[in-house]
Amino acid sequence: MSENKLAEAKAVLKEYGISAKEGDSGEFEVTPGVYKQVSIEVTKEEETACPLLTRPLYILQENPIPILPCIFGIEPWCWVIKYKDPIIDFNIHAVEVRDLDVYILQGLITGKIYTKFENKSVEGEIYEENVRTGEKRNERTVYGSADLDGDFDETIYLREIKEELAKIVKRYIRRTEPYASFSVKSNFEKRGYIEMIKSILRLLLTGSIYVDDIIKVTVEWLWRGERKSITRDIKIQAYLPVRDVRWHLW
Image (cartoon, rainbow, N blue to C red; front, side, top):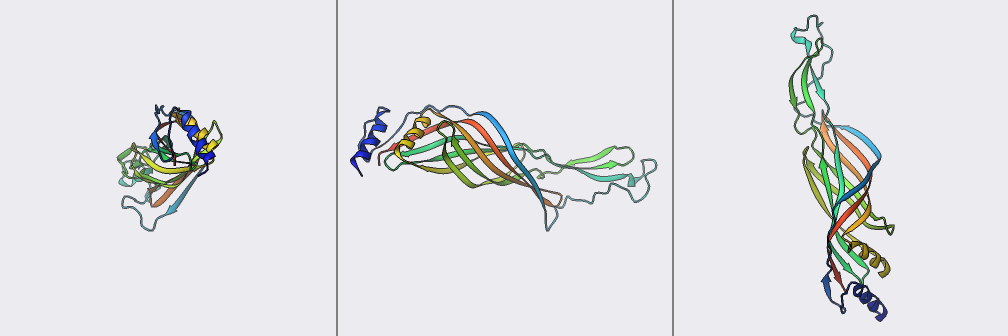
């Protein structure tokens, strides 16, 4: 290890009132901010459907036109089976950065990004409808028809210094029911020269970083014998809270 590089690393810590020797470790005092979303934009969306080899048991043949004429509306064959499709909606975005380790001599930062997925969908329905009167009966929710799973890629850019902090690839979204949410924890690492690490560290220690949160997400669900999917490209500007930042002089 060159004396110049060690002296430069010590100088970084000294700016924060820390006097250390090679091999030392410690923790910075950081007051975490709060999550704040500034803007969100869906830049691309694509929907697909793929037939299943086996169809769910709840699926019945939809018959909008009775074989026999429906004259008075009271004949049994006036009633046909119909469906109301589920409404698919969801949120996904990073919520915080934490458990950061800054290895100043190595030019390395490691940490964790927590990404929240929220299923905001409404499940589909099956019902009978009178083709003459429009009356509905036997309306039932098709439970499980808006359960979502899938995966996502995510990149976090630091807007102030125009630098990528973290790139996350192929993270799994577990099966999630409507009105439920959960967080995905992803590890990341960022390498760079001391000046870059110093710039990133300065932002982290404010307790809040202003980022572009770029996400490509695919969600899938089952409906009427098909596996359907939506793929969205999402760009979010937000402030992410930062907590638990440690330093290492090795």
